[in-house]
Image (cartoon, one colour):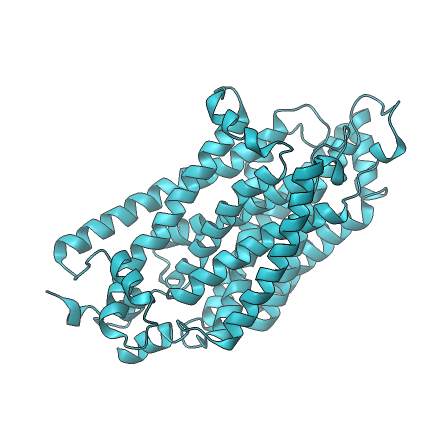
Length: 435
């Protein structure tokens, strides 16, 4: 029992590597914050967005962040509720990613606002008919549920560490004591925690489906070519599962290697996660085919322009790299078991995740570049969208914030559930703290 506690908590200490990593993130954060201050001072004119393309990297990034956050629901709720016990060591990693991406997704929208001080108007003068209000509501709801699903299962672990782990940094002990909520393994406490988690697992499923379905409606409620589609809801959800699963696999590999968790994040877990990624990628591939086959068959004039720009025009290179290198080749490779080993699967997942981000770019930019009305009587640079260095830096700011959140949570709290792992092995880590 002591070995499990030590293995799953030995990383909870300050070391040189942690300070170097956080120092790097801190410096990068300061540089990117300077870019955002420039945007606040001079307005959105410092970006590449203009009258024609008024949504750029920021909205592409927002859709990507919302997508990646859905993995908490897939791992904890869907796979957990159907009895897949192999996901137990992965649930906290998935929920950490869900919390980090959902938290920053809201900030990305603020980055896209030229007048962020007017954010309160969304709530003060909101209309129920506005999908933007629905988006704010479901993102907030999903974040709260994800945060509770991260915190509640951790309560027994924090109680165990506070009582039985003597190597905790001194400043962490009062934090663990407060967050453990005087947990002492009473039957009533166990009953409350189990019921609460079960209710949250049920609630997070409609919340997760809503968060990306509503996001898809922001596009599909228009008549623009490329967005005027009835499949955008399930299409976005399936794409979200692909991005989120890839993100979890990458995080699993990092924690397995750097926190020495080879005995707990085994080849079996990577193999099974590879199978999950293949499954959701196949579903996503179907929707990708549907997205282009149906308008290509009807080939309305505006759709023809849009498809031509994607497949052989300005966006062709990104389009084919995303489809072939970010989806088709990874699916074929992951069908072979040796490609579902930790290292090759992580490399494949990195390609999938990168492709997932550029896919969101392709959803947003090409459609806005080709409005129904001809673009005329505007400066030449209004006609072509090119992200500026300031815009890229502010986009990187959101990724830095996600990495900071994930780093802090994973560094100072157990990455893998201690009590659940011990129970799966027939051990009782709470025996010594029972009252």
